[in-house]
Image (cartoon, rainbow, N blue to C red):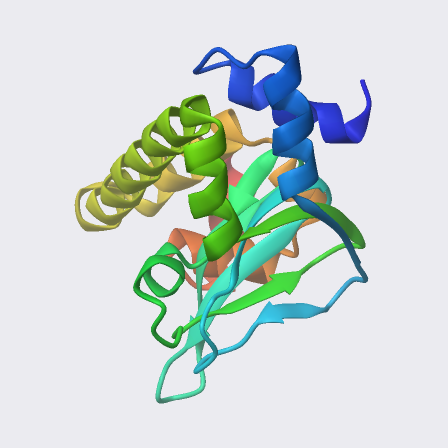
Length: 191
């Protein structure tokens, strides 16, 4: 399947898109190639884009006052990444978004997304569903850090995204799970 058409494939999973709308949608997204270790967003910048990851691996994270990185998102092929709080409020971000691999992305700006909503109302429906799911996932992740053990969080990640362990450094996975690299190592040895 053509990489650009993966975007259409995912849009069609939750809404009806006509052939004519497909061209409008694809023309609204700008293709971007980014080398490994490239920052697409830094703290104190306004997040200008939502990215669809055609191929690649990215993370979003913040650095606390002690200089410790805390990973908020890890995204692989055929997923979305952004700082939605900054994107929609148009206020400065607290996060970095960084590529962990050479990546091929499609991006859309705030103004272009608003225009696309008017041109193709089905896109607004898609993004409403996407943002609802993102909100629920964020709440589930927060709840898991409060009520689930590190072993349970590890097993959930392994079950839902086994490829993340081949593509993301373990120190980042540990941060994403809210544990130390040493704890992750012990969990992996017991699994």
